[in-house]
Length: 305
Image (tube, rainbow, N blue to C red; front, top):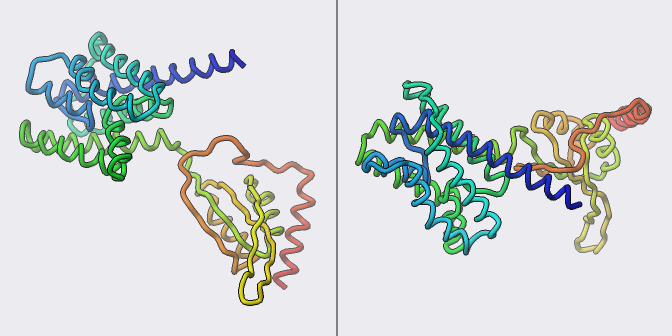
């Protein structure tokens, strides 16, 4: 058990290290040499650096301190510790590593700079660390004022890019907004995963046939829990199974088609799923189940007749 815990910690910090390297590469090889900004605390440090002759690594640490102090009272101590290590890691990489400037094309700088920074931030967040303190500010204000974290970060960056347009230039501000959009989208993709899963809840009187169809035709795992319906003036109730399944978005149309063949009046609720871990996401059918599938198809055929 102890060795598993050590392996888990090592794997977490190794991934955080990868995130630090990617973020540092995006800053040093793309954004810093061309005066482009990202959002959040990194953006503040980049903006101040254009006005004063102070090393970017020092500025990043200095501007992160207030957010880390806020995080000490807002999030878990473990996250704050990891975040301190991560931010210091980025600062050290920026200070000592001599990454070469890869391109001077402004569009490529915005896209690939945002791609690298967003990937690094996303990997760090997935492993319980924060490379940018604006997320901590978002958590704090969300708890105090009830405003969503996304809106807080957006307002924060609108103010930042407005100052950039006034202090530096409108062109740099526009390219910086593009960088931020790319970084934010990549961060979300890394955190939520590349596969697009959705959840489906199905209520039908033909639940037995639908369960077999999902298992056999789609090869997808499912969870079944008990439900009741029919409460009314007569006070009669009918028990049935409620089917809950997680499925790849690619297969959703096929699921709807299968359910419609069995029960065209089935009640279906579909919802987004951001993260899926454990369980059976893809169940491959062995030869023994082919007979069961033939029985199911014959049953459906009889119902349709």
